[in-house]
Image (cartoon, rainbow, N blue to C red; front, side, top):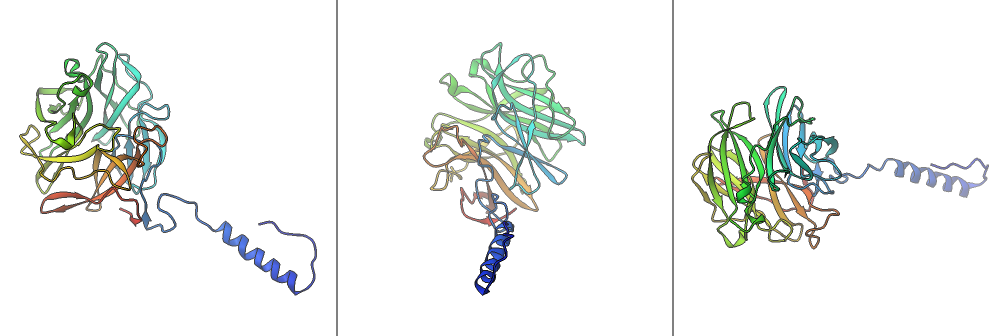
Length: 341
């Protein structure tokens, strides 16, 4: 606060000085604005207001590590948080791509912890030989990386089906490891299928043969489904997925119930369970986390009317999922204050 060194006389001067003192102290005590606003027990979406498409997070200790599609010159941006609300940039989880890949289209990374000092990252990248998007895998000893891919080629490519994207690892209750992905059929005008296949215990190779689970069949899905992930709730295996064009308001999130990681799977009649409203447009490509017994959906969405923009792009949203008669109900997209996780 600026103070005057000039001696002033009279009651009026004393009153003015007192007023200045009160005003100055009030200004300096204002909290720094955050996504939670002035009440530290509350938060308001979006929780990341810059471009953060295709988000996925894992918890290690008391810290959450979030990965998303390339942005800001980073192949795999990684952010950290202790509460799922306030996020801090933590660099590039995959600073160096393998020799068989080209930069610029590194999409939808997802990580899984296999041991105290072993983390696997599955990611989509431009395969040089195929000319299509392919899935790679990389290994790190710490959750934030750096991850390294020492492979001689892609883990999955499916070039004849348009490429392979949106890989998602899953450990089932029996300890088995699985990988989900999508063939990028819409890139060449063919069907987009969600696939699953068993992973070896080290997470580096696939075992057996892949299984087709679902493809686009419903009007709301448009020409594609993508962004799959598994989640078990009360013993039931849910397969969540996004559908329709990512840069349109019609993009939305749905789910199916699967008998096992290899199917069969049946889509929910109430789909989509997350769709455009006045708060956000084109919400989808989600991932799910559980904190203190509550389930939360991390997903990206555009500001209404700015679909396809690069600034701010697809922002990160966080909304709770409740389970009603065994069915997931997403309370969102929300843009009003709500209690923190």
